[in-house]
Length: 184
Image 1 (cartoon, one colour):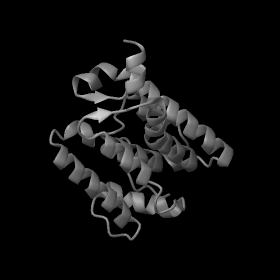
Image 2 (cartoon, one colour):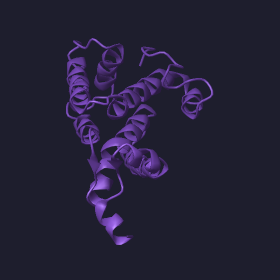
Image 3 (spheres, one colour):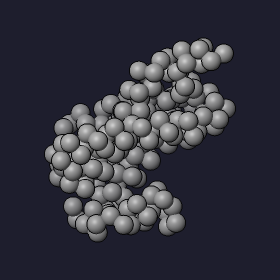
């Protein structure tokens, strides 16, 4: 993919771990990797940066529509414009991002994960998608992409544990309700 997204950017600042992960990738992949990182972090931040759930829902919906418009070269946001080119280059199905947007939508307002299967599905819809895109850009085959998705879901679960205190202080409970009841 031609350089369509700058690197480093606000989502991969110099000195950060994501900066070095992208920096040591093959030069031909850096722009695409920086792009998907910017997209992922921009959308993932919506539930945390919008205090009004209505505004957060509208913003998320706008991004979802913007990604759909990007496939038709009708997007307005620079990240979405570049995502349109990436989607076509990687021949991603039209509904590829739908589970991701659905999972982020569930993070708006008070989060309530009911059971382990619900948490696992959430981690697959968020972390696995990001890892799959990284693997796809790197030229991974189907087996490698499957492994990347498993790793991405696991890394998202690690983030859940890492951010547990912050999330609980902000009415975001990612630990399954049935697990909390078992350990009362």
